[in-house]
Structure formats: structure tokens, C-alpha cells
Length: 287
Image (cartoon, rainbow, N blue to C red):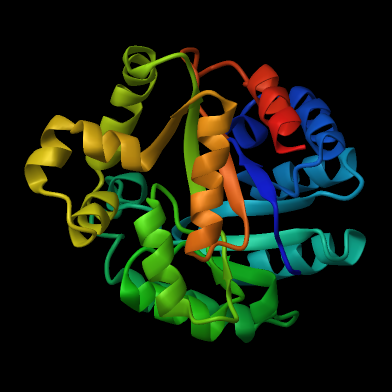
């Protein structure tokens, strides 16, 4: 699977109304997007994948990401085999370690530990399953150099989330020429900075509270003060905002930095509503 072009990343496709998600997926396929990406927080993720695949004809469906702490590897491998047999060449399984706050609970307060080792062990079990998941059928949620190295050696590539074009450049250097690099880019279609900030500031602050993302940005050279205040520089580098041309420029910058495919996450003032008009607007600009 050689993903290119632009995809759509949306929590609505996973956690929204399944019928609406299927209808939106069919339209996104017709609009020319190359992939649909969905997050995971446990539960029937493969049912959601199948829902989108059934509703579409050509588009790739990808998990961005399947939370490895919340699924049995043998069950994942069996589900992967079933989905890819029915829809050959159209499912890409992104796997990630998520975050301690999303994984730890009262029963297992220290469940999240040694994420790199946990990923390696999960991949070992996928490889050793009765119906193994091939390395070319999976990508890893990778931010830091060690996880990027693992993605290059044991998967088809990397799916970094909440990153900048500079991270894409560094990730391509770390991965080398062969593996896929499939970053997520959050975008806001708006008329100016004030509107962009009103929509994106709280959204970004929630992610900056997660150590994995905060540490990645610190590695990229941002100061802790910039994270604490959500500086304009940080906001502008992580989120692409403005009109269609501004969004397309950012996508081109990712591709110039080494991305094979960029998945766009549109956020709006109403986080509960599926941004279907914004998807149409971007699709028209991409054409």
C-alpha cells in the first residue's frame, strides 16, 4: 500500500453516529480523499473500520491509532485477517501506545509503562499470531527517535500526530527513504488569528497537557514557556489556519519535508458536529 495525497482524520468517523459516518465516508471517497483515519479508545474498533469500508469503494481506511493496551493481540490479528480478506488493499492498521492518562485506571494504576518495550512486545505477538499481521500492513504512532526507528524496522512506516513540518523533516531523516511517513495536520478554516485562536487554543492546550506531545515539542526546540502560554509561534507551527490556500501551503510544506501522505483533521467551533462542509471546501481546493 503506497499511500499518497491527502486523507481525513476524524473522531466523528469512529465515535459519531455510524450511519452518518458511513454516509460521510462515501462522500469523502467521491471527493477524492485517499484515506480515512480514525482514533481508538478501546471497544469495537474493527466494527467501525468495517462500517467505513462497506460504505466506500476505493478509499483506504486506517486506524490512527489502535491503542495497544486496550486490545488482545491475537484478536487484533484475527480481525485484521478478516478485514483484509474482505477488503484487500484497503485497510492500514496504525498502532500506538497512547498516553498514561488514557490507559491507567483504578484497577491498574501503573498499566502504562515502558512504551517502547510494550510496542515491541505487541508487534512480536502480531508476528506470532495464527494469522500474522504483516509488517507492510501496519504503521506506528511514532514521535521520538526510538519509536521512529522501530517503525522503520518493524512496520510500513510512521503516523505522527500533533507535529510540525520540522518534525516531518526530522522523521524522514530518521526513517530513511523507504518507509511511509503519514503525519496528521490539524487545520482551521477561518478568516483570521482571533477566530483561529478561539477555536484552537483550548483544543491545543488539552494536548499539550500530555507528556508525549509536550516532550516532542520540547525536542523540536520550543521552550516550556511557549507551551505554557501557547505562544503564537507554537500555535502557528502546530495548527494550519486561514483560507484554503493557507491550508494547502502547509500540506505542501509537509510533502516537501518528506511526507508521503498527510491526513487533515478539521476542527471547528462546534466539536460535536461533523465538518462536512469544510471537507468539501478543502476537496475543491485540492482539485
